[in-house]
Image (cartoon, rainbow over all chains, first blue to last red; front, side, top):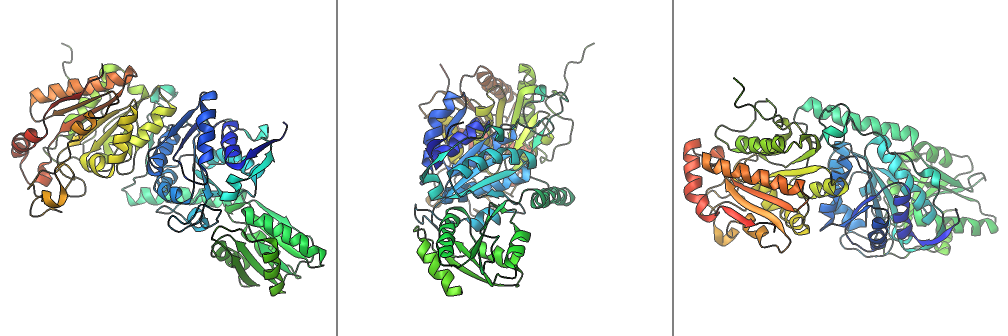
Length: 355
Length: 245
């Protein structure tokens, strides 16, 4: 298929349709409202469902209901909206329903700002809602990857019967890039007859199904949490994605960075290479599961003197980087989070200060 | 001689966890009878609330989802929009629907979502132990209103059927009671009608049912019925608040 020039938000909407998702519920919030605007027009063209809910709280439960009934469903929002949806995300994780959430992050805390940010790393990877659950978190670095990850998210959500999040910063949603929609990323929906509330008479067994998260018996609750944990352990084994950049050199510094920030870091790395300075980049493409072993391995390469986590936040992923490096190297951090994306020259100055 | 009376297929033969004298059991049965009468059990999905009826799925025998507190109408919206062929109902109490879930019920009703809501109004929080609800009567004692509801501080009780009846969007909104056999028969008809409107794809349907909570009212079941008749019915007038054309 030929490439088309599309804005990230619109491309995410189109990717959902191409992945076979015909159900979308959302509430407007900058900087991702274009997804809803795009799908308000596009869903009726494919006989799909578009509904603007009255709040992100309600939208979270519209997603839960639709997912519980066994249909592919997605919502998109931005940071404060995801806070409101986090209640439903916890329930969806507990009740083991597949659903796709997209967070096009803006600055926080509070109303924060409307410019790009990576301030929701903790929220996405460490919980957000209450209780013992994890989100599978995919972090695209541009429009093409946002499309591919959105399409894959539906397959992953069904594989693990749980919520999957695309975590992009505002720039991913707002910028335009050439993009194509790979047909081979569309998968057939899994059979959900053994758990979804699709109506008893539609299923061979004629046994009724329950979608619930209340387990008053301590053993039952413990068992449900163990079942969730087993899925998270499987994700750690099977779903870790990352990219190494300039890591085949004898780099003296290893940058860990994701999303838009990692692309700026790549530019800095190319510029430093011209000066004869080798710097490596490890870019996590999944934030949970996190590329733990890969970061440890890349950071302990003999030439590597120290590691730096560069983020559009006040220092969130750096805690995971430190955990992975296990004290074998010094771990520094640089971040800005007002909405200005650090320039390549800024990164170069920071790196040179470490040499 | 044939069997004249039996348990509806839509109801299980479990013992319920409801307190003696509580009217949830009656309303459960009426809902189950309506589902049986219309032959829709195989395509019905119920939504359990948070509150006394959180375990309603132990007593109904159709597919069920369990909502967070107050969010049942949003979940019902999600199911009904993606599977319009399913029959979806929410079963909610007054803390769930009229307090924390006020936003969800108003907007679902106003969008004219084609599902059915059964709203149990017993003027108090049951499951959590008798706290004040938006429907608690002036002066009525509750564990969070030990001196009785002070309307200067908490306003007057919310009349949900009246409120939803004011919406311009077409719908079926009625308030019934289950305090005596005559009322129970009328409630049965209203619940069946509410499901019929949904089967026809006509409109949102809402049946408020004035019920009792002897345990948290501190009354015997018989006295609770009398208190409800004397105190609740004059304020919560029975009847249809909106009927589709």
